[in-house]
Length: 164
Image 1 (cartoon, one colour):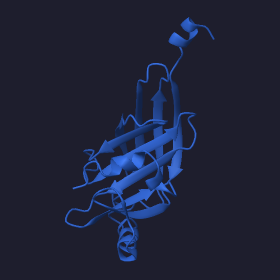
Image 2 (cartoon, rainbow, N blue to C red):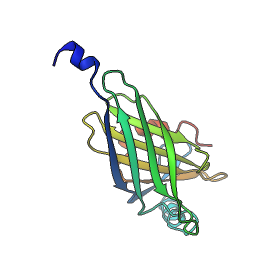
Image 3 (cartoon, rainbow, N blue to C red):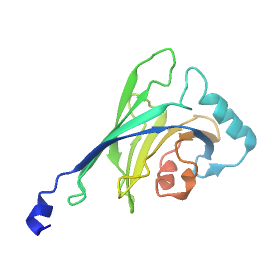
């Protein structure tokens, strides 16, 4: 490919669908909360009818231009309130994490008590979605994710960004 071909390379667009199957309790710092009672409380909370996140499928549409690094993404998910069967669309902003394409929305208007995160490798594989449910007044928040080990990557640093 010549230089001019690369300059006009089209952005890579796609849609990734992942199921949120793991629950973790996180401290306000973004670190894992190891207390079994907090993890159990999170599992109960994210399975309840008005905060249903566990088991949902999140569909994320992305557009990434690897040359210019201009990128965008939006995640679509069912409303966490089982009584309101609507699909919410959350616009995500690039997070600028080295070695991956990562996006997030911190306290989006449609879900003000959450963070919505999405990441994938620079090869556009390994899609991961996470929703951090903020618990005002508690020592822990609840992370529902498709990632079996969410505290080992760059996105975990963003979990502690503003958890208050």
